[in-house]
Length: 126
Image (tube, rainbow, N blue to C red; front, side, top):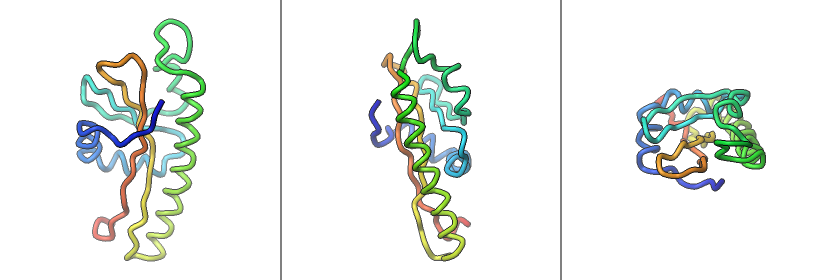
C-alpha cells in the first residue's frame, strides 16, 4: 500500500463529510473507509477491518503488513491530532494540523489503498 494525496472524488466526499472526518481524527480505534463504486464514506472499527477485508485466502485484497502499516500511521496521526486539539484549546488563534487514515476500496483495482487525510483546525470553526 502506498500513502498518497487523496483523489479528487475522495477529497470532495471528505469535504462533504467534514464532521465524520474531524471526529475520526481523535477516535483511537477506527479508520475511515471510502467505497469508490458507491461514493460512501464510513467509520470502521479496527477489529472489523479483517472481517470486512480478508487478509489471506480467496478474496484477500491486502496483507498483514499492509494492515500493520495502516494501524501504525493511524496511531501516529491520532497522537498528533490529540496534541493539535490541546494546542488549539490553549492558543485560540493557532491552526494546528490533524490527521487520520482513509482506506479506499477502488472500483478498478484488486488491491486496497489508503491515504493520509489531514486538515487544519480553523479558529472560526470552533
